[in-house]
Image (cartoon, rainbow, N blue to C red; front, side, top):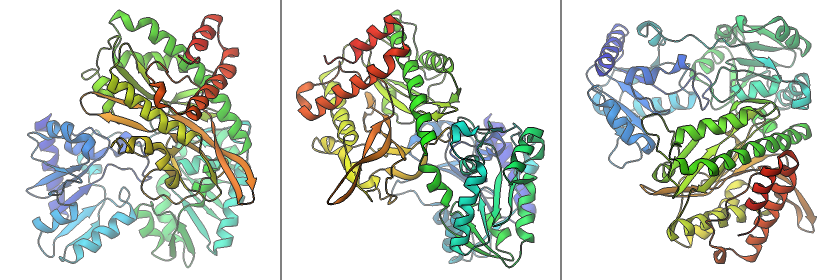
Length: 592
């Protein structure tokens, strides 16, 4: 394989020479910049042999490297050996940025090539700003992988389907009308929607083009009079064509979007800051382009009552699946045959038996002991640990249902645990409960609440590096903005109808990881002389293991919250369980 990688790099260099390009940058992205990338756009993986989900490759005529973050240092070290590519570890003081490195190896007058479809506008602007000072030009060229990647997978060809209004709660035509009001109020003529989850939400359609996310590759262009979906026409059926027409939406081929944007003249077009450079370049040729946050992101984040009810129903079924899985795990942990992969398979089996199930919402993280300390760990047949009746198992998983998306983490003791593990488990639980209990005034953003989840840990000199919470889409992406709960500033206020996760954790490298996570709904709390206050409803329904809690570390208020949560879990799930399952749940939700 390493020999094949060197051949691929050589082919790229030959093509670069023919186009007078002295460096070519390959990003780990598609034209829509989603979390998961279809195989057609996995060019960085193909050219480097590095299989991690994130990283940027830069190739010059006689040098090259891969820039990756700390999640992949060990993996990349192994996979890049003998490829001729250097490993550049991001966020390490001695590591140069891509522009810094290019300025050190290129000369004035040389050119750096990028694929405008898979490079964000903002990235192009940053590259040009830094490289122009050294007389180095950034140019958009035709995707070289069209030529050198002979067995490249085609564009996704799966047919999207209609999400009935009984699940969405609002017609596509109504949503388009709201978007048109935004166009009118901002004094623009068009809006180009490029984020696939925003298109799916607007049109009440879903697809299977993207792993774990029910999306379909497309663009949506809306003006005050027209709406056009750009999608490969062979993906549409008579049913979906008739449906789109009924909602006032026409359709054109996916590749027509660039020429259609170029053909528009003298208009004002709004695009998201995450737009790819090629679309911006086409639209700005004869028009004024405004780069603004998409209004659809905020519309989508605030769930309507139908979506909220759907979430609640989906969480009931997901809770039943989780309970059945936990019972199975408890019964089988002593047989010595369970691995991180086999428990993932069992959890999938339990969920797939549920009504409206449409797949998992992200790759399951099942980390036993030291693997639990790897935040984005995903077991494979080489790395999967065999479980023993001791220590901690972290399971972070979720599902896609027609009526909602789930995301839950539980840390489960498989047998005896240490005092250190118990203390860390309880610190995580304290932070989790403090955030779950939060009551806050209108206008509060997630950054202002983040400290609630961390304070007990901070008092012990402990912290975690990831965010505390993210939005969850309605049968859409499990990671949804624009709101978040995290240390760095995300100013979007939390509003009633917004879903958000609560997932603090402690990770001790080489030993174990602990995380507890629920998906929550922001709801009105009360109105006082000081204004409106909001709080969180716990959507996730699954017992939190109590065997590992050091009870004297919990305050009476925290203990009472856990007791009430468990009473809610039992009262809502027990009617859906067998007598044996009810008894297990009764024991699991009783204080120890």
